[in-house]
Amino acid sequence: MNQAAAEATAPRLRLRPSSWPAAAARNSYVLLAMFIVLVALGRLAGGGLAMALTIGALVAGWLSSWSP
Amino acid sequence: MALTINPAGSGTRGRWLADAGSFFAGVLVGALISAAVVMGVVGLLSLLVPGAWLPLLVLPLAVPVALRELGLQVPVPYRNQQVPEWWRSVLPTGAVALAYGLMLGVGFATLFVTSAHLVVLLALPFVGSAWALLGVVAAFAAGKTLVLYLAEGTSSHGDVIARLSVAESTSTTSRWARRVAGLGASALILATLLHVGPLS
Image (tube, rainbow over all chains, first blue to last red; front, side, top):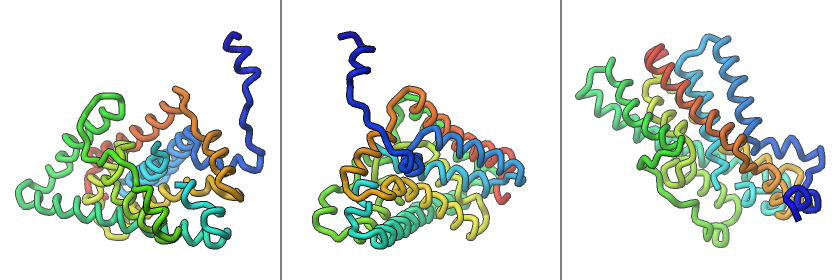
């Protein structure tokens, strides 16, 4: 069986749409999007070390909570 | 952590929220302990190094750690172990949440994950305000606690495992998304510290 056929027959785990917001709590793309938005908002707000540290701390905390 | 602190493990949704609160408080206190140690070291260094040069001392420590995130085998001051699993069998969920939070909040007692953690701690002494410092540490604790939302609406450990297996992506693009976010956060802090300067 080739790879495409194997993927087609393999059981797929899917979440109900109601579970998507919760699943976003551990999603790399959501994390990156949040970081970009926060940096943009931080620049609009004038930046500063406290702002950069707050964004960095949120990213560091969230990212490190996914450790294997 | 969502496998330990979830509605099924806590018994009720209310108890789960209380346990999540205990975890947040533990992380907050643990991170404050690490911050106090780093600030003490920087305070001692300030007796030897002129204040204007102190932020530059962050670079020789932060840059190698960032390089490790890119795959270089650089030694880092982190314990290469997870939280003790046996605590779950001897302590009630609320106490486990607090103890795990404390250990994870300190940061260096478990695995290295992102350079942003070390960079935040190293830059923290230069923030110049106790309230700003508390806000930064609270943001770190909130980030650590956010992952518990993964268990929202679940009624069994099996439900949480199913969500974990879907949410946890090991694809190359998602791995790079994590690296870009972590390294971006480190770069943002270092650039701000060195460009804008301390006490901003």
